[in-house]
Length: 143
Image (cartoon, rainbow, N blue to C red; front, side):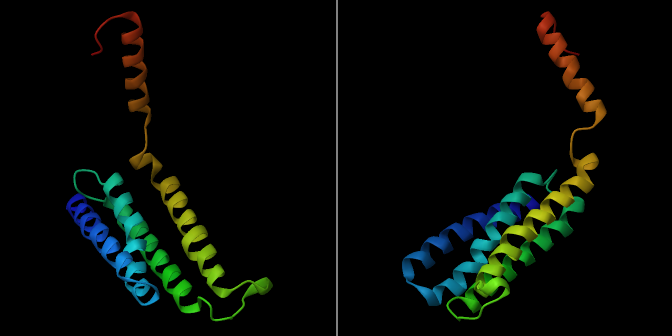
């Protein structure tokens, strides 16, 4: 189910992005931003789904989606508003740095670290890979 949903989103989003990009400037950016910010989440969902399911990655991906949407909305709301945040930098830059760069970086790295034993390479798989390598080097067929 996760793969179908991600592939469907990618197909529809690609056409929507192209259509909205060709339509014109700023007003359509409000429609374009949520679609564009959903693309990374659908690509990650497509890459990490196992047997069509996301499993325990559903929550981190939902958080990632929300962070990206908040970042895009903040950038659009405060773009050119003249409102300054910390150190006199534009507030839209803070949304970019916190919600589109730092937040997703933390969410993806922490979820990967917490779920590595479940989703990564375990000892039995490492042993199997070593056996295959030894078998290929010796010219025999791996078991």
